Length: 347
Ligand code: C5P
Image (tube, rainbow, N blue to C red):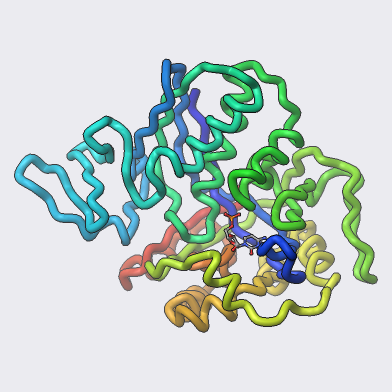
């Protein structure tokens, strides 16, 4: 089974307050984008994981993966001790990966498979191959997208019949971004990430006067239009817990943020969407890592209609007028040594 595990960007991300469990209450419009990891699931006796860092054809080399040394047999070894053979497959001597996205036991995709084994009582194994194209630790939900793909894929492969909203709720155990990516489509994410609703689902409404979006529909909701994006990553590693710790005072509730974004996305107007972008964590992340602010400014100077940060960073994204403009800006930033790709929202 082959699955495209789409990355996400946060068109809005509001931090509403601290919770007693150490997490923060959030409210975020999560938008899936064309950049995706390839996830291959094959029936197997045990659980195995192989990570192909370059993701095959069309994949983008990640800047922080390029510091390795190469031995005479063509095997590269990076500073963390991970080896990669000339075909791009990373393995330890036992045939499984041992790398910065987590050893086999911590890898989110493997944890997703174990979670489904546990809740279903199934003893089946699965061989998971990840073709990584989404930058790791970049605020694009790469690991969560892989985990979501495994939850959705195994639910089908093992004929478990778990409804999508229950699967999304299970995903919260793995990571805060997993429920939104299990649900798919444009999602309004709330709580610490476990409450997800289709932002454009029939029945969802939202008012500028302070009323919340109604949650009477859990169906996947497609974006009304496609928006063209340029992603850029300055190559700094942004630790999510650190950014949340350094985040000062939660801001007062601003109901107009959701309302404006909903109207802007419905209008299909990139200028309006660019104006409605919001990320409460951006100021903190840019204070800790000024490179992030610089990358965001570069996107705007190069011609994006507006730009923001995704998740807790370090990836920033800009809205471009059209696909040609997005491609041009991405190439301009690449020439300056920034990791950058053009992408678009997926519906
Ligand atoms: O759930 P996840 O593993 O993605 O979260 C990583 C860390 O980010 C948490 O341990 C917490 O410090 C912080 N976080 C938070 N509030 C959230 C999500 C994450 O404080 N809603």
